[in-house]
Each structure stands twice: as structure tokens, then as C-alpha cells.
Length: 158
Image (cartoon, rainbow, N blue to C red; front, top):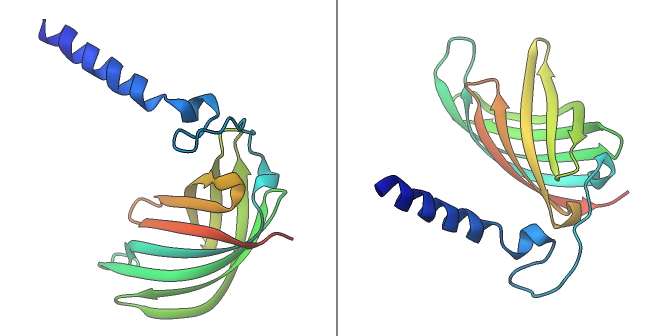
């Protein structure tokens, strides 16, 4: 009996989570705008990103806290370049580090980014694209010791 009750509770929670937004409408605005699938073109232009989290301070070293800002230019075709300014609690500030990488956007407005800041190191981020590409939320998923999140806002569209 308890399992049946728990299943009913979960069904109600899931049904509540699949509300108006899953039908292409904003629940709090009452409009009926249809959602559009995302593509690599959805991420095109320059984004200002604020990041924070933790990372290894070096090979075998202790974990350090990091904060930073990044200007990232997405080309709309799956490539990006960036300039970052990141400060670690142990390693200090690394000014104006230039880099780049690749990205792939899914129709569901999620994306995968691969960034190689140094030879042999690949950072993988998972993104959620919101507000028709004006904003992006990110979480670093690889390498495992890096735990960082970011919020990006489009500066302008080329």
C-alpha cells in the first residue's frame, strides 16, 4: 500500500513539473508562444560569462577555489574563441588567457562544449540555453576534480 501511495505522489509531482512550459507556453505569462528547436546558430555572438567553483591547483596539488570572467565568441557553426581572466585561491590571477574550442547544440537547447586550455587537458561543459540564446547556464563535468558553474549573457550578436 505504501508503494502505491508513493507512486501516486511521484505521479502528481511529475505531472506538476510537466506544466505549461512543456507545452510551449510560459506558465507565468499566459502567452502561447511556440518553442523553437535550438541549433548551433542559437549560440552566435559574444557572451560575457561569470564562473566560480573549484579546481586542482596543479598535478597532485590541493583543490583551490576559483572565480573569473570570460568573453566567449561563438561563431554559430560549432567553434568558439575566448579570453578569460580567472583567479585561484592558490595560483592567483591568470590574466587575458586566450583559448578556444568546439560546441554542439541539441534541439532541446542543451549543448556540449569542449575547451582545451593546455595540451593534454580537455574541459567539458554542459550548457542549458535559455531566453532564445540570450542567456546560458553551464556546469563543468570533466575532468572530475573541476567543479565549476557559469552564467553567460549575450553581449551582442554578430
